Length: 480
Image (spheres, rainbow, N blue to C red):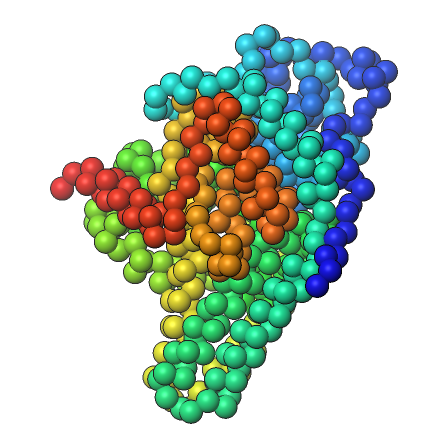
C-alpha cells in the first residue's frame, strides 16, 4: 500500500514564541528574585523561550488540565511546551501571556522554586548519586534533534498505518461479536470472546493515546472528539480523564508527589519514600501508608499480576469520578453520553449469553485479560528512577531518559505493543506518530551515548523480571 502521509506545515520548523524583537525589547525584565516574589504573591509564572508568561487566566482553560501548567510554575518549560504542543500554540498563542523578559542569573538552572512550598506542585524528589552530566549540552543537542525531526517531516502523520490498524480493530470486534452471538454456548466460546474483546480494548487504547496527543490531525478538538468516540463508546473509559492524567504524567514523570501514574497506594509503592504517607498533588490527598498499605506493599511483587487483572475496573471508577466530580471536564456531557452508549451496547451483547455464570465469565475475562495493557504501561516506569540527582539543573531530556525504559521486541511483533514500547522516544517527542518511533530510536541512543546518559531497554520478559525484582526490593523494606 502506498504511504499516505499528510505533512502539517506548522511542524516544518522549530517552534518559538512569535514575538517581534521590538515588542520583546519593550517588555519589562524579570530577575530570578522578582520571579520568585511574584510567584509568592500568587502569580503563575512560567518561562518559555526566554519570556515570562503569566498563566493565571489560562490555567483553568488548558486542554491538558491545570496541573500540567501548574507543575511548570517557576521553571523554564520551553522543552515541555514545545514537545507537547503544535507549533502554532507556541508561536501564536503563548505570546498573549508574555509579561516580561527573563533575566537569568548565570546559574544555568531550569527550576527556580525547588526550595519553595507551592500548594499546587511539590518540589521535585531529589536524591541518588550525582549524575555528572552536562545538562546544558544535553538540552542543546536535544533541541537540535527535535528541529531535525521537524525539518525532515517525522511529525507528519502516515494514515496508511491507521488503515492497517483499522482492519485489525474491525477483525477483533467482529470475532468477539461472532463468538458471542453465533458460537456454541460453552465456557471456551465466551472465554475466547473475552480475550478478543480485551485485545480490541488494548489496541484501541494505542489509537486513543495518539488522539490524546493530537497526533492524527494536529487539531485538538477534532482529535479529542474522535478519541471520545473511540475510547468512551467502544471501551467505556473517559478520554478526558486520561488526557488530564497522562499530560500530568509526561510533565512530572516518576515524581513521587506529582505523577499519578506511580501513585497506586495501598497496592503498590515503587519507592520507600511512599512509606512516609506522601501528599499527592494530583489526587489532593495524603497517600496513607496504613496497615492495609503495609500488607499489600509487603506482598506487591507476588500480587503484581493479580492486581493488574483488576486494574481496568479501577479505570472505570476513575473515569466516572472524573466525569461526575472533576472541576475540569470540558467535554463532560458528550463523554457521559458516549460512556452510556458503551454501557448500552455492551450490556445488550452480554444479554445474548444464555446463563449468568457464562456472562460473568465473559465480562471477567474481557476485563482481566486487559491486564496486558497495564503491564505494558507500568514496565516503562515502575522500576525506573524516582529521584533527580539535581532538580534545579536537570533538563527535560535528561529527566525523561532517567525515568523511562524501552521494551525490545521483534519488528513483526510491534503491533502487540502498539509502537509504544519505544517509551523513551515517546517521552522525548510526545507528538511524534508512534509508528515512527522505531526510526528515531537510533538517534536517541546516539544522543544518550554522546552525553553519558544510560539508555535502559529490556525484552518484555526481562522487563517483567526487572520490575518484579524492584517491587520485591521495596517490599523487603517494609518493617514487620
